[in-house]
Amino acid sequence: SAAVKGGYETFMDKEIHEQPVAVADTLRGRVDERGEIQLDEMRIDPAVLRSVDKIIVIACGTAAYAGHVAKYAIEHWCRVPVEVELAHEFRYRDPVVSEKTLTVAISQSGETMDTIQAVRHAREQGSKVLAIVNTYGSTLAREADAVLYTHAGPEVAVASTKAFLAQITACYLLGLYLAQLRGNKWPDEVADYLAHLAQMPAKIQDLLDGQEERVRALGAELADKTSFLFLGRHVGYPVALEGALKLKELAYVHAEGFAAGELKHGPIALVEEGLPVFVIVPTPRRPLLHDKVVSNIQEVRARGARTIVIAEEGDLTVEPFADDVIRVPRTPTLMWPLLTVVPLQVFAAALARAKGLDIDQPRNLAKSVTVE
Ligand code: G6P
Image (cartoon, rainbow, N blue to C red; front, side, top):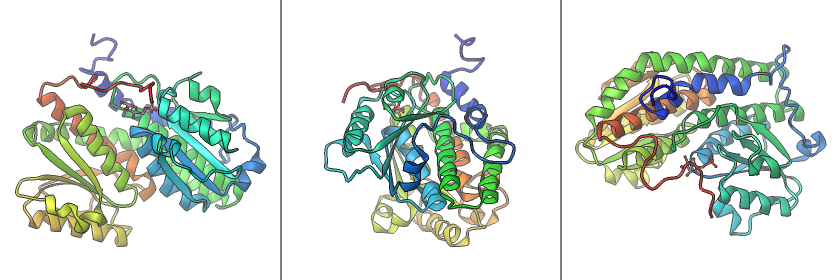
């Protein structure tokens, strides 16, 4: 009924709108008044955390894309290599894991069997395991050495939305905590990033208030398209992958995410008249990143693509090449995924709605996959 959905038409709508709260709740109580991170639940010996020489993130689906985003941040902040592994691919090869590896398992449910099996394998090799999970007392929470809960609240819609933002937030707390512990970053730098993180709930809300209606209209308008591309660079790359996944899951259309720089190495051959291409553009304050992605918009547009550009407020350079521009509040590059993924979620849900599909329970999918 509408009552359990908080007045929204679907759980997915409700959960998209709960994202500012999911981020705020995941941050709450974990930063003290001096701007230092306090993770009381981090029950792994600080000496072990200081000696970690590699981090392996294990997850499936949307949670794996949260890990992919986190890689950019954690490597930058901690100077530790981060590998992101799909749990099922990690488990059945011969991965290099040691006592100096920190394994981070990300899962909304904490019950994904592929992830559980991968965690068991990592622990057998002597790695400490930190679980980033949303569900209290879940199997992963019980089996890990420590748990950092995301506080997204129960997620009912099968396709993940608010858990994704909460997972990125928790990973960022972890990354800044490790940087703090290992002395990679000055306290004021950590405090500065935390201040930006703290602003994210309000920015996500502004974005929804300002753009949701337009993005929904765009979803309805493009409902007869059968193929979509998503391009992003740096942290925009996993966002592109997640945007494509949402569209596959909800609307059953072919959608692919690519690293924008890879376009010329193959995917550009797919571009034809009228193909919708989403492009996630980095801030113009990072010109080396920004200008290359703007060139990519030109390249696909010149070949007939219908370009839908996600760009920072005030970035006028994209206007000449964009059929539509979705404007996102200004924020540091590493925070960009917490904003840019939101219109992609809204778009996928709107397109599915226009096709009359069951948004909360797409065909063939399960909320948590408890078999390998
Ligand atoms: C299933 C769900 C996805 C989810 C994935 C991982 O495939 O349909 O939405 O991202 O499992 O689930 P987890 O609970 O481990 O985050």
